[in-house]
Image 1 (spheres, helix red, strand yellow):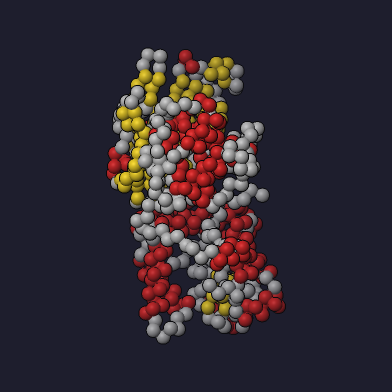
Image 2: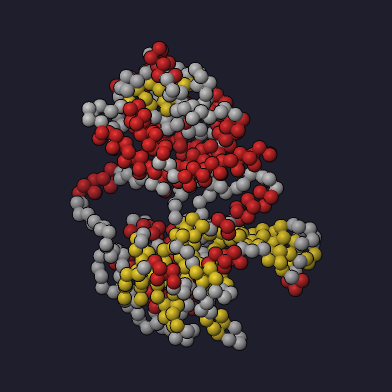
Length: 93
Length: 487
């Protein structure tokens, strides 16, 4: 997923709102149990790997698609809606 | 977790010190200032493909930003620069060890930057779990006895003898004992008494009470010492007749607050905004905002007053949310109640609105069920429903500002605010004005409610709690947020 380097993106960083949105997302993902779920997924992948020689890159490649799929729709909707509203109101200023 | 780094990082630190990491981290990982954010916004792009991601890394050996899609790896191989920093989390990758490496010194630098970043953005400080210091670690190793809290534990639950219409006191005590933050404060022995065991300090007495409740003993307690202390410091409550539980709550909080700050002597000196730093203020004090708008000149006169609880009128059956909505509704003060507008310098009609500026960690609601007037004394028993989880956002000052701003197409405030509260105690008055009895429901643990009827403690269901009449309702902030130290 590539993010456009637009003025909007720069503004989000400058105002600190990108950090705030990240923190909100982090909070929601913890509350709904996703973080614990991903931790278990990582454990499973390490166990599956019999050769006991798992690298960070291997782990990321194997877990990422499963982890992405496990994000609840409610969390996605809330963040998307809040970011969208925020950017729209910013635009008019 | 191994935080001694790796030989390659150690060698790098020996040669170049921690400055390269410090600078990269302060400007591109946890931006510690507005200037830093400017740099990050404009120059944090992959030198190879020009994209701001995915997973940007910065070379530790030279000035080179690149994404993890092969570009940082390429730079590393070509230049033989083996250490690079992940700009999302600040972790150092060692290409020779083929793994992220954790170094205690760098971790501490990262932590201090995160605190600065949070302060710079007015955000809450990230939560760090408790780590014992050397003395505490030694003590834990020496004192090997541990208490295991099983799922069906009855710890924290004890009955209280009724000393003759003292059920009003028993209910308030049960509520305080099961207020999570207050419990943590007292069990952590945070109270350092200035009164030197004179036996007159109410805070010390409450501290002893917490030890009793969490000792695991099950016999009911008799609170004659506590009762006597309250009588001494709140004369209007003295006597063996039934008192109002709400009045007793406020009086108790008041005495605890005074004794926390000044020891037993009453030479109180509050801070300007009415908040001191005692545990009572930290937990129970919120700010109530009153805006009075002159209908002629539209000038606004605002005051913010501290509060420990919110008293709500009961107008027939309804819900707590409806009561709060009425409480925070804009009210037109008619011609009989003109106020002097400082702008117009004349008496004008106005609208007044109350909103919650800051919420306490424990929000207490008092349903005004007892009416005392010259004609009649009566109790309003209408059913007012209350939720187990309550979002206070609609009643906040920030929300009202956001609503007004949205009408003017300005950016909404408060989308990052978390105003969720969870019910943890309910005090009920059963019976009539003359012949009544107080009982309390307390949440011992999540999902575990108990009815406290003087010395009788019985398991209760959430349904039973929510169906009860409700006189005093106690809510605790669901997610705790930590402020930066003011320095």
